[in-house]
Length: 414
Image 1 (tube, rainbow, N blue to C red):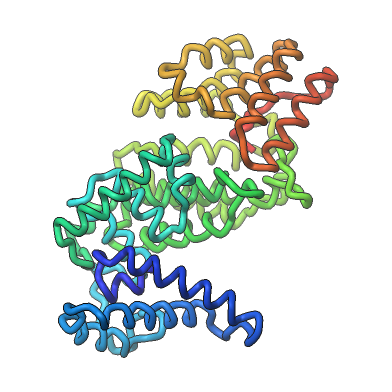
Image 2: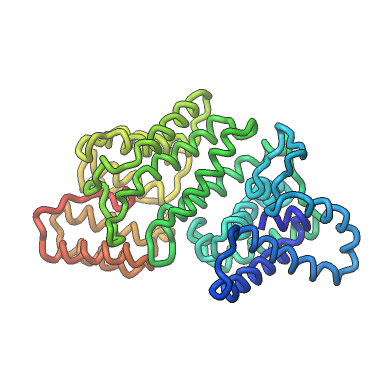
């Protein structure tokens, strides 16, 4: 997508999407018979490029773009610069990251920039984007339509921003990468809770960004730290059967120490400035978990303090729910229940399954087992991830049997 849009212009996003889909269909039809090519990505890109050229040849304005396209085709098969091409220090050499910056053009409304990036370059569906924004699919579809209309009406070129233009788009780029990672860390649809491929790509791009002059900022380093520290727990987030593991049940010796070290390195770099962003706060919470030798040693008071900082910046119901969990660990289940019940804008959490999962844990601690079982059953009904549903139903059965060996934990910390 990034290569094709770089060739034909950001105003042709729909064309790029269409020909990529057609190229993928052709791959599914031919590869089983002729074998997977040595470079599958290059095959798909080249096929999509030929399909796009066939379409553009029918258009009158194709001749205007032909010289640039011919020059571009002389580069590598994936659109990477040739050995003799020049990439300035202020430019972004990675195609996908360049395209994300292009999608975050200031002429496009901020939320539409991020939605467009997640749809066009990150491959998320409208439902997944709606989940990321706590919105509905209709609203996201309208947002994407407005973004594409803004591109057409403003005649936005596919430009490679540099200098101050990069700085002005950085916040939207960071948010796009943050939401991409979140979708991979806890998928909103499908059979699997974790989509490591999305998380790895988000980490690759954010570390690429921190290595570039425009992204070498405390906030971007904090975002990198947040991703790496959370990704370090991947080996133990699920068991060999794909079933969810609670934080307290995870073998910390199997956490990826290399990723933790990289995360703490970026967290140190993030502390170099005076800014305290939401990424700083979340990375600090992740560091509390990653540096605790075991679950019992987790510094919940420090986590609660960071949640207080976070909610002071952003009084979101989701953040308030996180804070209620930390408060439960510090002050007990009665305080946690009061905190959940006092969350502003309760309608925003009315169909959010983790609200009921959190309350289920709290009621279990309060020994209200029947109430807890009903809450876990409601949470299971509201989630569409099979592994999460199985986990919540198991919790429901534990409540019904009044299992005395269960110690409540934060389902959002799994």
